[in-house]
Each structure stands twice: as structure tokens, then as C-alpha cells.
Image (cartoon, rainbow, N blue to C red; front, side, top):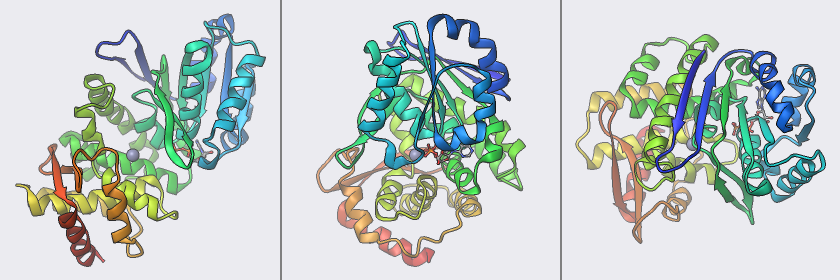
Length: 353
Ligand code: ADP
Ligand code: ZN
């Protein structure tokens, strides 16, 4: 068991992150006396409920189940959940328990931030991606008017319970998706990079269980210094400007796979414009290729480049802002003219495919 406390700069809210096995049977069962005293509701999705209903029912708390899938990250689901919270009689002292992947965490966190102007939320992330990334940092949102995460709020969960036993039921594709963010963290942290490089099977469950706390620590350190994403937190955007643009053009690739493709492209872009360590960037690319099974041949590079130009993180007109890996454990911000960015992407695509 490993426990972290995150205290955000300037804010009164504190988050405690507990990494341990059997959270449903042990941790939440132990919490029941205070959860019952204040009132609590479990929010989950249909897949997670189908897999874990036996353990969930043993907690004897009311449960609200949403239909699984990103397409349900909508205002309808948010308001259906808020209605349920009101109907079961949650009070200002009550707790919402969000049990599921990133979608459940995002909607649950937002509902907790809105209900009675904010009640406590416990996040129980059940995917690798949610444990190493989305459950840490208090970002919550729904998609709206066709735009991803358009309506949201910062709402720190009081507890995050990260339990590796949930990984046993995850499809390989979901593990690959989480590994995308893990490799991004490794590009920011030399120690994690060495751990991943020395590991034969990156999909091994015991290995993943061991490195989840390292990843939470890396993300928590950044979030603590920059809770609202004004400066340093942009380093977490590594691989994401290009990756996110690729994601918008391809619906057969997961977020994590697109981040890995983005990292692959952006590390080569870095080598063209900045002082970088060539041997390290080659090792980083080799690590990425151990997880990525697609070669990205079908990517529409020009469309992706155009979408990257529209990214809200760009600071100047006609430039694309990237956070790129440079040396082991180091990154840099790079502003590129759009024309250079498109040319680089096209040439790198030729090199890669
Ligand atoms: P993320 O953004 O963290 O990948 P999602 O909420 O999109 O999470 O979840 C991805 C899919 O995995 C969803 O269909 C969800 O129902 C399912 N899922 C979540 N946790 C588990 C688990 N532990 N085992 C199997 N499937 C899961
Ligand atoms: Zn991401």
C-alpha cells in the first residue's frame, strides 16, 4: 500500500491518493461507517457494473449505472446522475463515489462539483489510463455541442483509490492506452524511463501495479505546482498537440495510441530544431514501438496538422506550440511556424512508414 497526499497551492482542498489492492472489499468496506453517516452514492458504468456487481452489492450503497461509452459523456447523463443524487437524498456532507474509467470519473467529478455547490467525491479509477492520468489533478468535464470536455470544472477528489486488481479484466487495448500516458511520464522522468527500458514485458500486471504509484507521483508533483494549468502543467501536454490532432482524424485509434504516435513525431521534430540527445531519442522511439501496434500509415497528416493549429494551447497566430522531449528527463516548449510544422510532419511520415 502506498499513500500520497496532494495539497494544491493556494487551495484549501487536499487529495489523498491510496494505492492498494482490493479496494472494494477492503478500503470502501472500511469506509462504510462514515460513508453511511453522511450518505453516499456509487456512480459507475454498465461494463464495470457487470464485471464487479457482486462486490459492489456487498457495500449496500445506492448505485447509479450509466451506459458505457464516451458517446454518453453528455449533459443527459450528467443530469440523470444529479437527479439520482437528489432522489436518494444526498446532502452537503454526502459523498459521490465514481467507480470506473475516465468517462465515469469525469462525469462523476463534475456532478460532485455542482451538487449543492460541491460535495465530496471519491474516485475509484478502474482503467490503467484513469489511474495514472485522469483521476489525478481534479479535472472534470462532459462533452458539449460536439466539443470534447467543453463544460467542466476543477474539483479535487477527497480520495483516489487506485487498485491494480481492476487491470485483470481490462482488454489489451485499454492497457496499451494507459501505457501511452505512462511512456509520456517516462519522457519527463529519467527514473521511470530506466524502469520501463529494463522491463521485458510492459504489459505484465505485477509490473504495472508497481509503476502506477510512480506515475501518480510524477503527475501529482506537476499538478501540485500548477493546479490550474497555467505554466508547468503544460509539460504534461508532451506528445499531445500532434497526438490529439491525429485522434480527431482517426476513430480507430485510442487516445493513448495517438499520444504515442504524437510523441514519435514530436521527438523527431525536436531533433530537427533543438539541441537533443540523439541516442536517448532513439531509445524513446524504441520504447514507444514496443507498445504501439499501428504504424500510422493511414493518418491524414495535412488534416491533422490543420487541427493542431486550432489547438487552444497555441499562443500565437499561425504557430503550433509543442512540448517536446529533448534529453533524458528533460523537455522543452517549441513554437513552430505552421508551414514548418506541416513540412516536418510530412517528411517524418516518409521516414516512419
Ligand atoms: P478511460 O478514459 O480511462 O480509458 P473509459 O471510461 O473510456 O476510460 O473506459 C474504457 C472502457 O473500459 C469502457 O468501456 C469501460 O466500461 C471499460 N472499463 C473500465 N474499467 C474496466 C475494467 N476494470 N475492466 C474492464 N473494462 C473496464
Ligand atoms: Zn492524454
